[in-house]
Each structure stands twice: as structure tokens, then as C-alpha cells.
Image 1: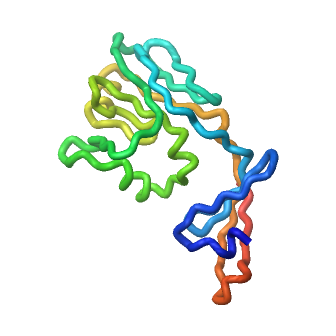
Image 2: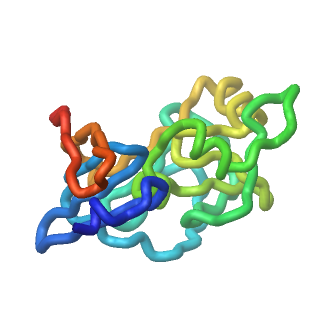
Image 3: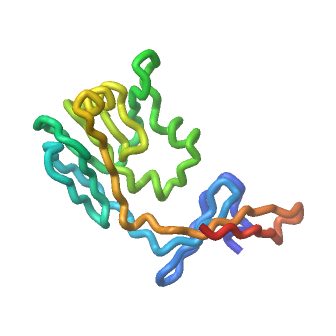
Length: 171
């Protein structure tokens, strides 16, 4: 009933003991129950892998010099300079353009160096941080062990809004 009554632009979440059904952009996702990510702020020297909560981790693949960084949970209103010749882009717009579901966005760690956002997981890197990594022949790797395969289904709404048809695509 929640799926039928919810407006098309709402992210619906129906929970059971060990699974949940979510809707995003007219697709349904059957996922294991997602625990919320608590707010955090962790110092990282970029030398050793950094284990975050809930099976998430960041590491640098390659040798880089010591650098003081802070890894934080998701923050609203931040932007990142993905290209040197372009203005910084609000993450909100990058998330919308990429189609990354909200529950995946919430799990991405934000890497700051000197109060500047340098990376969002390994999804987006600031151009200056990417250049620095390239100069050291290194790369940033984000791993999320909770990221699991989900079943997606394209939802076709019928005009009377009391039924919907699903074409299921198991990943």
C-alpha cells in the first residue's frame, strides 16, 4: 500500500526483519536491512588502510607521503572541484546526475585535507588530489562490504495508481 500511495518523487522504504524494499527513480530494490551510518570524524595519515564502521574502508593503492586527512560522514552543502578548468560542483548535483541511490550516498566517506573536500569515497576526486595521486602512481580505493547485490525492478505505474507492474532484473 505504501508503494501505491507514495508520490513518484518519494523514496519509499518498507522494512522487514532482515530485508527492505526501496524505491528510487521508478525502480524497486530488495536489499538486506541497512543500518544507519553514524556521524563520524576520523583522522587518517593515508599510509595505512582506514577501517570505518559497518565494513567500510579506505586505502591508498601505492606509496604516498604522509599527509594529514580527516574522513567524515556525509555532509550537506559541500562541493568538489572535479575538473581544473571548471568551478567546484555541489555534491547534490553530482549525486542527482549519477543516479546514485540515497542509501548508497549515505555510506560514502568524505575525505578532507586542510578543510577542502578531496574525495567522496572513490566516486569523485578533487582534481588536485587526483593529480597528487597520479604523481605518486597511486589510487584511492573505497570498499563497502555491506554493498550487496540487490534485485531491481522497473515499475510501471498504471493510471488508476492501485496497481503496478514490475519487470524484475536480478543482479
